[in-house]
Image (cartoon, rainbow over all chains, first blue to last red; front, top):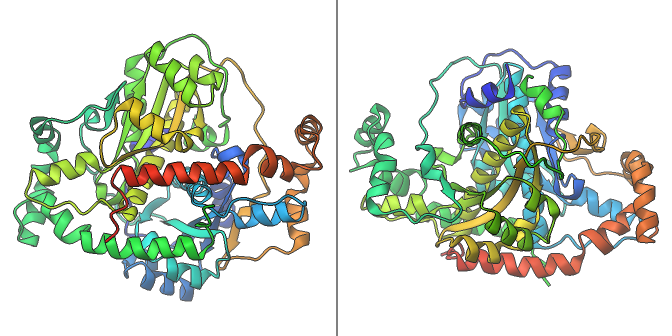
Length: 251
Length: 251
């Protein structure tokens, strides 16, 4: 299956078979991860592999007890990591200047591009994956659990295993919703209506609105799934984490 | 070519043919971008397509006058974007709570996963790409240039075109340098020596050390390529940008 087809066939998998993943295959997938471009080829990221059932159970607790974390044979936690690089610099009489927010963001970019390579490489082996957005919310717990030193912050997680389901492709906004030609195109009210029309008229959307007893899909996002209250709480936690891990010495 | 091979064959391309990219192909590549997982399927990102030669020239100036920006027929600027989503919420009597740092980071993750899909999809069509790390350094200029509203921040850029070179694969640290089993493995000094040995003994490295008249590769990073001074300067700029675009109302 060519790369384009693998990309187009992606769906998040949340139910997995018990089958474990062969180490040779896992290593090929991780190796594929490392082929992603990174800033200056510094490779300022790390990947933590969790297979041990007891440890998966702890991760399951941190990740809001989503069942897929227990089911999947492998959990990969992707970290922004300037620790290794800075240690190398110090051993070379080179003073590292990577304890600032830009460096955190640079390392985040590295880690995230690698994670998407890993996701697609895994899918090319017939595995299924799901990203866990809870990683940034629970970063403080993960740092403690994995014993992450200065300069290391978890930024995303992928659960990995052989699919026990084959869900439909999920909907996307029309391409023109996310593409701008030459300049940012400010949306008129009517354009927003049109761009969200299909999404708002899916059977899934009607079901969610009924279940949540709300007026519309947007309210499900703002009042249930991604509320201001939660965002503010997790902002505090995540900024504290970035500071504690030594990435906010900005002068 | 299967997805794994496409991933393994990636090299950054910095010299391009004059050949333009057919719109049908470009649209397929962008469509492939949109198949990436995003947080809650909110798709909180935008892609700005630059083809116009005059506008490319401006981008070339912003991106430190790297020639590839002028040469490549298409420049794609990937933005974290909660503007569109929030506008939709407001039109639905749903109060968006996405003006905080966590939301900025969430939207960054979306944009970056999409960018890597785009990179690989492009490569599956025989195109070459290069990421521009200068995007975050020059975010303030790009915001002005593209006229980006509240809730939109450029986070990375890809230049895209038919390769006029076929460079060797670049080196990577051994896989074990970036992988940790179950817990974060603190590196001993000796481990660091071993993990960086191959990189430090490449002919390219010797050449760079000679050119820069420094003692070692690490010093090239800390004293020339990614200095503390630059990181601090660009941290200030980028944090101001995030604030100005309305992502730092954290309570």
